[in-house]
Structure formats: structure tokens, C-alpha cells
Length: 488
Image (spheres, rainbow, N blue to C red):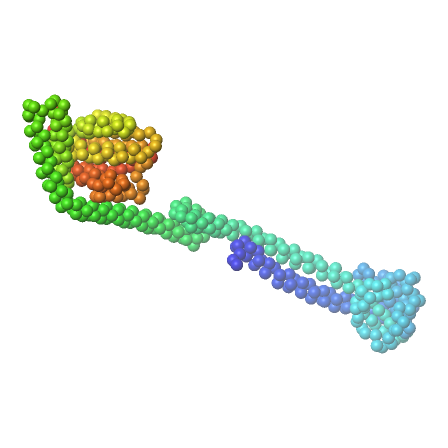
């Protein structure tokens, strides 16, 4: 597993320090051996001096006085013993050791080694040099404590240790000062990489880098981000364009399907309209003939007038169906939507009162539009009939609201009801021929499709949306008539 840079630097320093300390320890041990050899030489020299004094004929008492005055390291001792290892003279504590035997198993003097490291009778480890005075015969032993070697080596070891520790601290401080800008740069790079991973392509502000290579890396990253942003924007634009093209294609496909369906019912509608128009013309003609007869009572004459009016409206509807099947409109003229609404309300007012349906009409200053009055009347009538059938099925308040609004460029009419609205799955099929949400026998599915064809032929738009109350809102918009075609 990767380790942080700071930790790796610490491990590297430790890896360097361990061998250095081992070398220092080895050097200290070698120096200690050298000091032991030096102590051996000093003890041999002192032993030779004592033997020389004895050879001059000095007695043991005078030799002991001289031995006590020889300059030796602290703790050193000079001893003269006989063949039985009895102390005859001693430079340290003579009163305690002179006359005592220091070893029960003494070696013959000829076999005593010239140099040995051992503990003295006082328990102190010393470096002993032995010299034989044959005139006695006596054995002269000079012992210097081994701690003297340690005391001489310790300053050297301490000095070396202080130097190493100082160099190490200096190196760590120098590394910290040199690596701090790099670690900051790395931390900044890690933070920036995290932001990029989360989708933030904002380029970082250029910062001062500790080296030319990292500055080049920073510039390369900023340039790479700029290209990534451009690529992402290009991809987003391409996706948006493809989405728009797909929506246009779907719209064109829907239009083609709608046109094919409309064309399919066109032949049927044309034949039905032709067959219905003949009996309607007969009914209309006989109603007119009966009205001009003098023997017809007045109340009958009123009913005949109603038959004539409704027959004429039915004939106009059939003509609209014929125009719808041919996808072309008759001659149009400037009309106002408020007048169209008024005429339809007049026809449906009685039916609304019988069904206890409240009707609200809001009319603003709508501009005139160029259209066929009867065709717009048919559209409004289809909207109202659908709204009436929708509110009949609700237990709540039964209310239909008609709004006529507009501005200088467009006139708008919408019909809102308090019904349950149209299911979401059925919304795309509302204006398809023969599609209906009404029970069998209550709708043919042609009302909205005919209305769609009429509004489209006038250059307008028609649609549906869900009302705030949950009901349905059907609306259409038509372009306002040019100023030179407005009615007087």
C-alpha cells in the first residue's frame, strides 16, 4: 500500500541513520580496543620502571613509596608479590592488602602472562601488565581500570553522536523546508483531482510551483480541463441537437400518423356526410314550407322554426365534416371569439340548467380572427359537450368556466371543468380520430379530432392541460386578424 511522502522521507532517514549508528558503535568499539592496547603499554612501562627500581637495590619500603608517587590513572594499582602470591608492596591501600595472599592457586611466576584483563582483589576490572624481578624473586603487576578506556572513548563517541544527530536534524529541517512546497502542491493536486472526479471542471487558479516540471504539469492540466470543458459542451450541444431532432422526428411521425388516420376516415366521413345531407335538406325544406302555410298555429310555427334552425346547424356540421375530410376550409371572415361563445352558450343554456351545471364566462378584449364562424362554433360546442359530460360524473360542484382572452397578436379561448380530468396515459391520444374516454354509445371519438383539423386549418394551435382543481382545460389559439381585415 502506498505511503504518504512525508512518511516515506521519515523511513528513508531512519534507513540511513541505522547504518550510521552501527558504524559509530563499531568505531567506538574499535577505539575502545585501541585504548585497551594503550593501557597495556602504559601498565607495561610502569611495571618495567618498578622492576628497574628493584634492580637498583631499593628495598620494598622505598619501592612502595615510589609506587605511590607514580602518576597513573585514577583507580590504577601497582602490586609486588612473592612466589606464594603474598602482597609485599601495594600502591593503593597498602595497610589493607600488604601481607595478605591474593590467590590461593597462584601460578608459578614463569607461567604468569605478561598481559591480562581481570578483576583485582577489590573487584575492579583492570588491565594488568606483569613483570618478573628475578632477584626476589618478585612479580610486579600494574593494573589500570578498563573504565579508563571507556572514559577516554566516551567523549569521542559523544562527539560523533552529536555530529550525527546534528546532521540528521539539519537534514530533516532542510528536507521539510524543501519538501513543504512539493507537499502543498501535491495536496492541491489531490484536492483538484477530487473535484474533477465529482464533475467540477472549473480550472484552478494558477499557483506558484516549486519546480519547472510541476509548473508545466499545472499548465498542462489547466489546458486539458479547458479542452474537456469544450468537449463536454460540444457533447451536450450534440445531445441537445439530437434530442431536438428526435422530438421533431417524433412530431413528424405523429403528424404523418394523424394525417394517415384522417385520410382513412376522410372517405368514410365524406360518404356519410353526403348521405346525411340529402334527408337533412328534405327536413329543412319541409320545415320552411310548413312555416309559410297560413293554417299552421303559432306555437307549431315556433317549433318548426326550431326544427329549421337545428336542421341548418346539422347541415353546417356535415359541411364541416366534409371540409375536415378534405382538409380545407371554406371562405373565412373576421370574427370574434366572444360572439362564437355567445352563440354556443345560447344553444346549451337550457341543457346546463336542466343538469344543474353552473356556467361562468369571462370575456376580455380579444382581437378578431379570420375564420369560419360555424367551424369555430363547432369547436367550442365540442369543448362544452365534453365538459358537460365530465362534470356529470363528479359528486362535487358542477361548474364550467369559459375564458376568452387575447393580445394584439393572438386570441385564445379555453373551457375548464371541475371533472376528474383525463388520465395521463390517454392525453397523447385525445385528438386522434375515434378515440374516446366515454362509455360505449356516448361518444364517437370524432369531436376533438374534427376540432383539431379545424384549428390547424386556420393556422392556430389546440391543446389540453390539467386544471389546478384536477379537472380538464381544453383550449385553442388563433392568430389575430390583420388590421385591414378587422370587422367594422
